[in-house]
Image 1: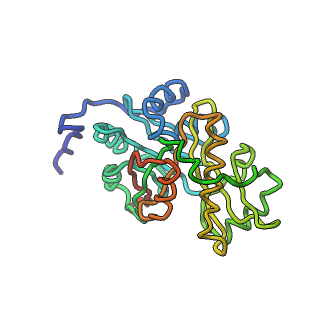
Image 2: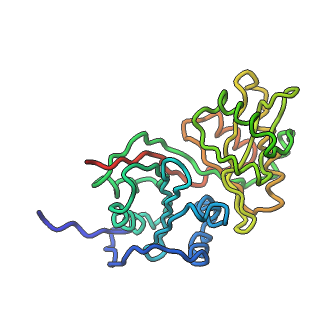
Image 3: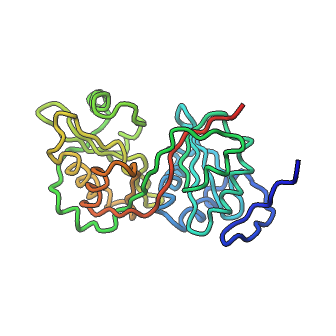
Length: 274
């Protein structure tokens, strides 16, 4: 068997030998991730005590990958700034032997190729990272909804079961006070929440946004998102979200509210090839 071709970075340059290391210093990670707080919003949020115990971090030079294991299927996050994909791919090649046999991944375009020697890629779907870049446009939608708390958990779970089955929702997030719900009488029929809310790192990531099927088309989700974004801007500088590229209705909604597409990535499953 011939020797493996050396890894190459941007413009085809050879990458210098550099070991991958586990990184446990939050200050080091924060300094690296804060260079692009929108691209790395989820990872910055995971530096908080709320998520930190469920994280494993890996670094190769200035490149960082996160394995989040606070969910049933561990999730790998690796996002490359323009020109850095080769360096981050080299990290993933070295990291692959110690990854779980099954996991989920959020990867910048092309990075899954760094893992295909050991893993099959499944259920790949293109996504956009969007950021609130024109908050003045939030006024185009009349905000609506009330802040939810732990007492609203049963109603929220009922809504997700009908409107958003299979979504990832951590009930602890209700404790953040950053979930806004709209009711029809006593029934919760729309909600906007967060996956990440970090006043420490000044970032938030919207998530778990949905509307009851019978109430769709009335602008309720947009009203809840607008109310939540106004609330979030008191504590963070960057409001971000992930959305499937083929969910054109959601993309248009977020654009109308002042969000801009700032990066693309792929969500996929990874299964060890036996």
